[in-house]
Amino acid sequence: MTSVSISQLKTNPSKVLLSAEDYPIAIENRSQVKGYLLGKKLYEKLVLFIEDYIDKEATETTDFRKGKDFEAVAKELGI
Image (spheres, rainbow, N blue to C red):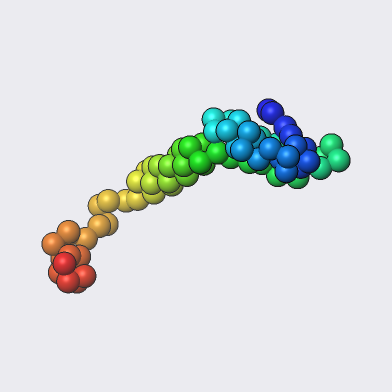
């Protein structure tokens, strides 16, 4: 994993942000990682992956035999 110091980040933030587009960048202070910088594209991929994982888990653990009729639920919701 690539890492940069806080000083390097302050000196040229645009360059560091471009580097973080596809892979996270570790931000170090006194040789200790204090955080990670993710580019917009990588962050959005990560969020989509987590949402898909949560949806998959919910689908796998749901007992659809106990479900309600769609029309009844729609009527209750007024849609």
